Image 1: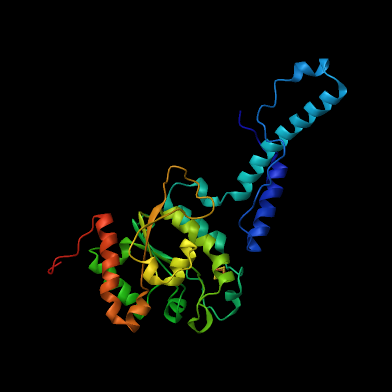
Image 2: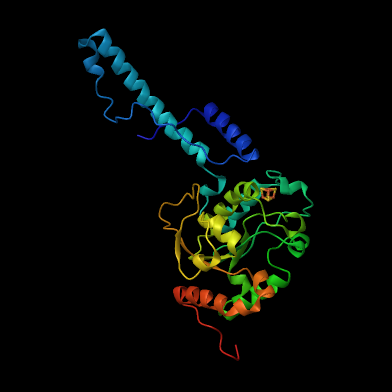
Length: 290
Ligand code: SF4
């Protein structure tokens, strides 16, 4: 029978969770009870015929069972996100954006950002691109990949036979690092749970990580691009995604468009990565007159 958490306790926990999230704490862990045996219960009638010692032990086991049930509920409260209660990805993304708010969770909020660059595109996209972080143009316009690198990304998407509006685009961090420096580890770790939630809301079939920073953060692998590229990874966003029927997505790695602008000789290699994705998604390049 499903158990119900006391409303006051639930409210108090929700407050605590909100406080933790504002502090940048997202993951909660449950210490296993030493009473892990589920065969507790059905002994009420036995109580009368047992010794004091046995009764105390049985009472302890029963209270452990109650604690375990409450524990499970608490865990559900602690690890759930508001968007998990909605199936519509548009509504889910809106809830995630609201939860992000005027974010001050990492130090990038006070290092000159003009605005948060949340993400853009089709909330039901089959293909998602993830970059590193906003640059100056993105910071000004509030949209990822709108500068020169964005133009090249648009061309790459077009070469795949689709439009920018068909895909979803986001970054590991949502605020511009000063001087376009690489986002630092603590900034990525604080911000990326929101990206994970965006991925879980959109549920793309394929994610393309643009550049080493995006790839390493998504895959938690520290390897050079030469090793990261050229294959698919099975990817499930960390944290609760609220849909146990979703098997996750494929993830491929290619060069960041900004790198391709600096070294156009690598465009052929990037095209090989995109062709691998196109084959998987059944996309074909546009004909000359399209
Ligand atoms: S980078 Fe992310 S975590 Fe840091 S302040 Fe911006 S939105 Fe918040």
